[in-house]
Structure formats: C-alpha cells, structure tokens
Length: 250
Image (cartoon, rainbow, N blue to C red; front, side, top):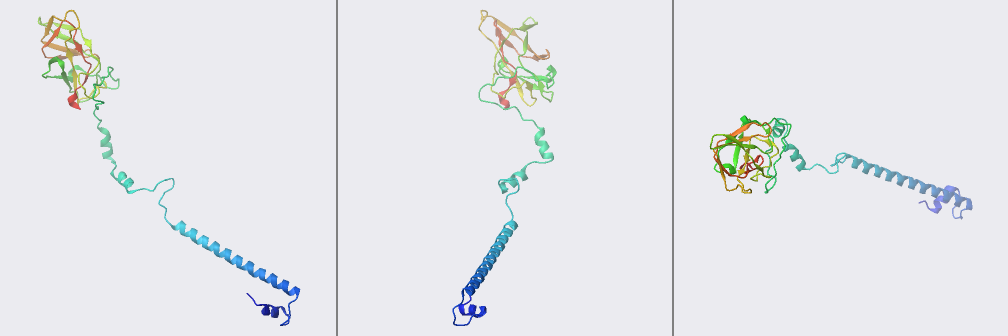
C-alpha cells in the first residue's frame, strides 16, 4: 500500500501540505481500483483450482459400469468361468431327470395317460417274478422309451378247469408303495408295480377261488400281459391298485 507522502508527490501536491479534497477523492478511486484487481485475481485463481480438481476426478477409473449398481466381484467372475458352454451345456440338457419322490406318504398315481407319448403295448412290458405273490407284481418297460400308461388293469384268471375267466375287481385309490410319483408315463429306467389283494367284504368271503395264471389287460390298448403266477382269492372281488412306481427305484 502506497504511503501518504508518495501519493502527495505523485498527485503534484507540495510536501508538508495537507492534500485538497480533490486529491483525496482521486486517491480513494485509485484504492478502489486496486481492490477490484485483487478480487479478480483471487476469482481467477479459484476457477483454475476447480478446473484442476475436476480434471483429476475425470481421469480416475470408475469401478461401477454404466447401468450397474455394484461393481463386479471375483465371485461373479468365478461363476461365469465355471458355467458350462458349447457341447457341455447341450449335454446337461439332453438327459431328463428321473421322477422324484414327492413325500414320505404314498403319492396318488395319475389315472390319465398323456397324449404326447406313444401308448404302452403288451410286447413292451415284461413281468418280473418276485416273492410277494399278487401282493406286489413288478414289471419292466423294455421298449427303450417312455410310453403312456395310466389307470387300472382288468384281470383275467386261468381257473382249475383251464378256462380264462374275467375277475371282478375293486379299485384301490393309492399306490401300494411310496415310490416316485406316477405321471401316466412308464419310464424304462424305473419299475412299475401293481398290487392285487383278496378282500373279505362280501357274503361269499368264505369260498376260495384259485388261478394258475393271470393276465393283466391294459386299459388303453386292451392288450394282455401274461403273469405266470398262482393266485388265490376269496369269493369277494379282489382289490387292485393303479399303475405306479416301485419304491426301490428312488
């Protein structure tokens, strides 16, 4: 800041004399001009500092891509690297899953065959001899493909006189075992079961009827599956279960 004697000399006033009112006004205007210059310099410096900080932030790499809320993590990369692709992805989709057991209780089998699959034929189904008699008859599907089969079989028995006679039956509502749910399609990888049990809920329960062989008539095609097994029933109609899966195939 300029001293008073210097201002007096520059304004033409004699040293040692007090300045006039006009000289004081000129000094005031000069002081205001210096202050305005200082304000402009400070504003320019502040603007340069803001631009420098903004440029640094723009050069700093962003960890979040556009449209993303969270940056990718190493676990995301690992998940993408382990996902199957190409032939491996196709192979995982080709093999269908086996029917799964839906609960520990006995599932209710489907009674209607799906129209999207070919019907099961008697030549496709083979009886598998067991030790439980008619209480649990097992059958295999040798066709190599699923086939449609659902509901109840009709029964014909070979009596002691060598005649094939129809046997009236009572339809039991559920499967005899708690196997996978029967959807109306006989999967060749699984075993089908049917149970035929004698009943005593009629007046003729004391009589005995013996058969040296049975035939199961498929409901969709009316074809017969031979079951070479001895069967003994009362005079009452035996009960029969719908086609279902064996529990040993879980």
